[in-house]
Amino acid sequence: MNPPSGGIDPASFAPRLVAWQRACGRHDLPWQRSRDPYRVWVSEIMLQQTRVDTVLRYFEPFVRRFPGVRELAAADLDQVLAQWSGLGYYRRARNLHAGARQVCEIHGGELPRSRAELETIRGIGRSTAAAIAVFCFDRPEAILDANVQRVLGRAFGLPRPATAAARRDMWRLAEQLLPRQDLAAYTQGLMDLGATVCKPAQPECLVCPFAADCPRELAPPAASPARRRAPRRSLTRVLLWARSGPAQAPRIWLQRRAGHGIWPGLWCLPEHDDQAGALALAGELGELLRQRELPAVVHQLTHLELRLHPLQVVLRPRHRVTDGALDGGWFALDEALRLGLPAPVRKLLTAARAAGD
Image (cartoon, rainbow, N blue to C red; front, side, top):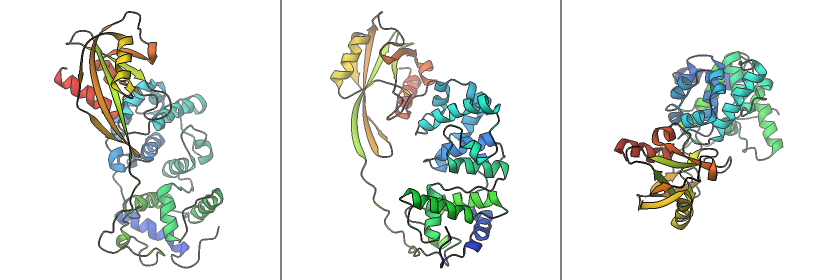
């Protein structure tokens, strides 16, 4: 694909972007402090569909707990999910863990250097592979995540690629725009421009390095209304918080969720449509001694608002129910908090531990 005529000069695109990145881009993110491919890989996976300010809270604790590929590969998946808890999109963590084991088994614990080989690692797509290859190995590779698609589309007057053919054309454009030098600054510039200036709604066109000749009409100085999102669907569920044992050291019944849907593979308080379903499970677990309803918890997902109603019950467990039955088991509170838990469940249990409840 030849870059479109008119508007921004393709030959000037990379030099202008590099100059802007060096003057105005992001330089102090924790994963920028070394060329360690493992740290870059973890950051790129965390940054998929997640804002930088959110990732900043998770990145350093994660790499302290798992400082390299071998440590991550040797860890139990529950340990990895526990460290990821609250970051969302948990399939990324499962793929990262599986990918680390793949790197150890096939590549001797060292990430491969080429984009093509990196793409063979589970969870690493073409754009992520290219970013690792550029930042760590100085390979001339193009990235094309959603932010970069938006930047190039606006800069060169192209529609969002809605077909495979259009996407291939945009990949060709991204490759043609690659400079022969300053590859890392150029690639980081694309990321920074898309995340901080050329945003989906209310782009800050007046501070863009391409403001003078970008085909996109400049945004007015006053903030324009953001594009309306489709309203979140609301879902109400009852969480069975089953407790057994002495009040000073209660055990909690958790179930592992399926490997698909919301919170795949995480341990969770059993979820039910209504109290009747929750109490039916409680009856299978033991003799009901007491019950109480706790205040509802509202948890926002991207396209879903969960209204969770915890029903706390105290049981005398049935001896026939053992760990592994009903896809669950009894855990001490500290044990439970070391598992991979959904964020709202972790908050409930953390608050219970703090209160000595």
